[in-house]
Length: 323
Image (cartoon, rainbow, N blue to C red; front, side, top):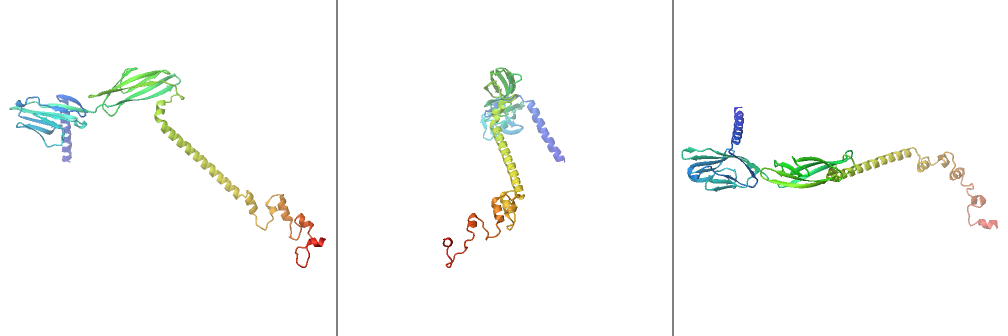
């Protein structure tokens, strides 16, 4: 319990020390990524007997006995340049932001410690302008919303010029139909500055309050979603129709409505004329009245009904009998 409290107190102590040191820094320096920082003592070498260089209260170099050496730390590996009694931190990185201190001692004299608060910033390498425009039919104007952007969070400040002057990354204004405006956006931070230019024009759209900047940016996703919805609706309609048709066909088959089921549903021994309500089929009537195979069934059978059915060698043909 006491150990944890002591640990927390030590952390807060270090943070408080760094805060105080930062507020009391002699110099506040802003550098770009890739640049260098010189850490030069305030007094000439002849007046110094001992010098120590620190970063956030960690020693990384020392001058003593007329010798300047780098201490065994992982700070600024292969990035320190030593010349006489001067030290340069080369190829600065964002993580190098912090408090540097140079402790100086002379012959029986304790000189003031030199404090340097370093801020390392990335360069503004590109600036872009994004915009949305809306046609307001009721007012017969176009309203524009512009935003100036840089490539990363570079703590930049923005300034608009050209058609109108304004500060800040956002800009709003209106134009009448066929009107146009050219604007410049300048982005600036502590170590760099860059700008870009954009021209916008007012034109009517098909729908009131429709953002055509939004449509331009999202036309492909909107088309894909709309196509997918149409396909899903079409598949649903086809499935419903197929299901209804299947159920309808099944019901009719079970009720014995089709011709084939009407013919085959009755037993073989039953008369065909019974398969219809009125027995009006001529074929079924002929079949029903035929009682035996000895009765005449056709016109030819009726005319020649008395002819012999079987011709044998002992009998003559019907033609011979007639003659």
